[in-house]
Image (cartoon, rainbow, N blue to C red; front, side):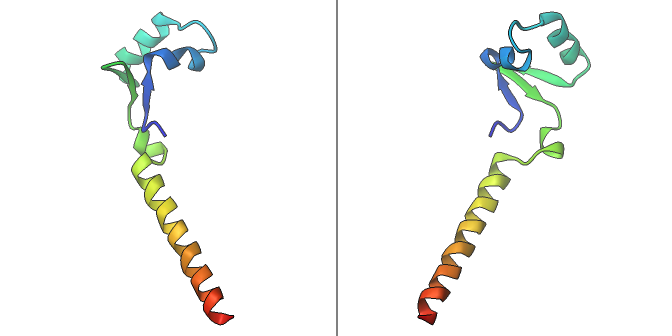
Length: 77
């Protein structure tokens, strides 16, 4: 989970090899991404993707449901 943060070394994966610096500069200029310490932040990431915090909350809620269901099953035996 990245919350829209792309580390500089990972940009090659996005571009499938060599980073196109001209394209990166255009994305920054168009405010699609912003430069951060060590990488780039994708603008409005959380409006289009689930955040790490929300994912972890949903995972914990799901785990709690499973545990509660198991407890009920054991009590029924």
